[in-house]
Length: 368
Image (tube, rainbow, N blue to C red):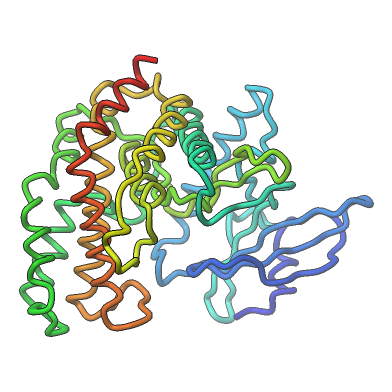
């Protein structure tokens, strides 16, 4: 790793350096909190060492990030908001670059202004907090509704193309059986195969022009929303590394998969795992309250289905990794990925049983 003080000096930070410390608990990028004294006031920045094992094209990733945040800042300013709180403000290097690549060890760094007076949470304490995260991601969609998503690079190809993952990752994993574990998960394999005909529904609708490409976040967990430390109201969306063209349905569905489940995604007592309809309703109210008028009817009609599809896809990815020998997701014990897959499949089955109620909730929100 490059000398962190030397890296700090590369960026166009304002004021006099005070201190730097490691910050946060992320598993992908290494993060530092950097403090400066700027005319008597403390200015905080975030400096990150980017993981180029996960993100193969840092240059395109950063072009996406700068394009989206620059656009958001202009829209927020036009609306009379505070762009330094309502979106991330990335900092160029002193020579005008969007990131810095250390010549010593080819490590990548980028920086942005710390969102002041804000906090984040890993799980929603109640449905109202989950609704606030829905408002945040809905606002993200609303503010970017006129942004041409085709201007962005698909930094992770086929990220939410469930049928592609099935044909090109899951089926080959079965054929190779690299771990020799296939005999231990036949029921789970059968579960995935049962849904094969549904996997291409959204991509087929996109190809027909029924679902528009939009700017999507693709990591819509609660801890990627910053809340005001005093009011607990959502301030802005962060962690834009996976911003790329996609479907708004993906962001909605993945939020429900993660946030509306009654248990952690590796809970082994499957009796504890279900989709909480109150949380589903709360998030949908927040999301559609901000962005509903910008979506077409096909998008709204498929929000409930997308929740099931994103959960199925995640479970299939866990199962694929288990069969491959745990080469992608970090695991804590040999059956960890299998337990995660079973958990997600229980959630899929529960959503199936509640699909009529989920769709009715969406219809009632739209009518309100």
